[in-house]
Amino acid sequence: MKILYLGPKSDRVHTFLNNYGLVDNTEEKISPEFISIYDWVVSYGYRHILRQTHIESAKNPIINLHISLLPFNKGASPNYWSWKNDTPKGVTIHQIDEGVDTGDVYVQSVVSFEKSDTLESSYQKLKHTIENDFSEYFEGIINGKIKAVKQDGKGSLQYMKELPEDLNFTNKVGNISDTALEPIKYEDWDILYQWRNNQVVRNNSKNDEPLDQNHHKKYIKSLIESDNRNQYFYVAKSKKLGYIREDRHKDYTELSYVVNPSEHGKGYGIKMMAKYLEFNKGVFICHIKEDNISSIKMAERNGFRLSNKKDKMLEYKINIK
Image (cartoon, rainbow, N blue to C red):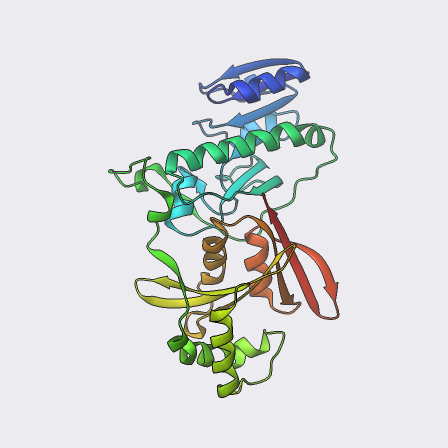
């Protein structure tokens, strides 16, 4: 088997590919005719555009390794933008098509970090994860056992010119975004009461009955005093955009969430979940009504997968190691 490896040589990926045959490596621009002599082409950090003529000349789909959870952060410096914009964090192995990181997806992995991580150390974790995934799944990709699926959603796209000039790779990743997760306080009971009693929010909840005010106050007090439950506001520039609650059990944590009713339809649910998952590991589940399309998209675009269905309630799960 002849393999073309495009991009700066990664000793780990290059050494792995040598197990499958003859491997050539280049960072230079190549012609469609050059690609046609290889059985498989793998791109990893390649700086040049592969056009439709290159794709058509390849014997098999061209495989690209990209350190973001597509469709978010297509293009340049995906690690930085995932922190700046509170988008899901992970890696993707996908096919190259005529767009920028828009090809069908083979494999994705969500990655969690530590609060001590910097842009540099978080990049190294992403790099380690995608190289692990490539070694694990390459065989399944080339023998057809792993099928590529279309990307869902528009996501985001950034270019090199958009990066700040004073970008410092030693910056702590937790300090890059303008948002925060802030623990609720008892005096927040009123805003929580108003949100939770909103008709749209109630329709999407497991319990769609109106809340009793006194009962709600007692509930908030017990939640704050609990050792196994926490609830956080998702805040941007002092504005409360939503909340996320964790109920910790022995083997998993159940997550529930509400977006500020005045901010519906702006993608804050996806960002709030991504913010929560940044520094958390373990098994997380969400229960979502089957007709709540926005919540289903929120879960799936953060890497959750459908694990169970009972009546009209869906269970979505993710295991972050």
